[in-house]
Length: 152
Length: 159
Image (cartoon, rainbow over all chains, first blue to last red; front, side, top):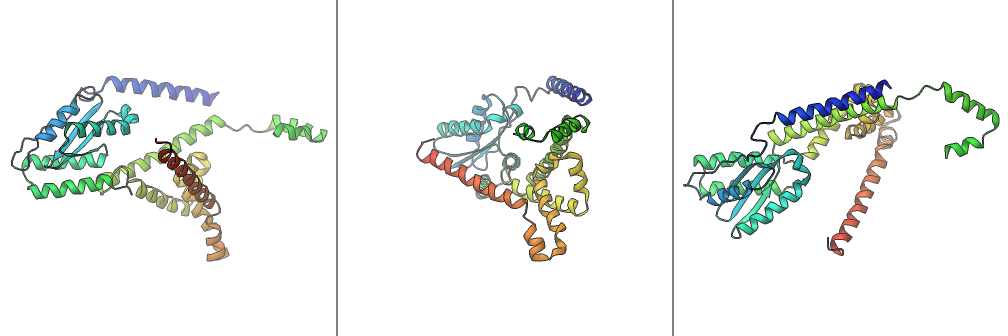
């Protein structure tokens, strides 16, 4: 009986905590998508990745988008709301299809991996500051794609 | 099954069963479940912290961070078992400490320590995988069966 009461109390606490946390969420979590357009123009043009970001922004549940492109490849990484993670694989597939359709001249790679998101964020910053030459950007992108496709 | 067996017992034994049933100390099932839930959850939490650490500080993705995480957890369990700490955790949490991969590590290492006195080959080598062996055998076998089913479904079923 005592244990049952303990369980009941824990259950109620869990429900109450999750409710209050939901209400206190900051605005960026509930609706707005975090992304930044790359404005640097001296390396290869990033207009394609900016367009991709605009397209993805309309999708529901995406919290942040990062994208970089060379003249042949387009790498996109995005994060989605926590409760949407059940549909993570299907969303990724969907986004990949959408990107391939929208940019048929580019080889699109889509990832939702935390590591790729972090790396792409860093790469975006570097590109934005104009620190990378075209060759360096290509090399970094190649490494990223390789990391993405690593299975073990 | 158990009730059928009891019916075939001689009357004296049946009376004894009835007698001991009332005096037996009841297992605190719910309490054990709660303990197992929290300790097992805590082990998984540590695993998640290690996994996140590999993703942030080393060159691993979410997919590839699994292997080093498992290895690290087993390594930690090895020390805890050797120092006798894991026994206490196991006593307290039961299934909560045996179901995660740490339980697998513990079963290998505790058997190795226990049979050390019988020699390296027949003692340690022979007994190390007494409990872990079936886990590996059935793990590999069931993976094979699932792979077979998947291959058939994707090749012929067109899924």
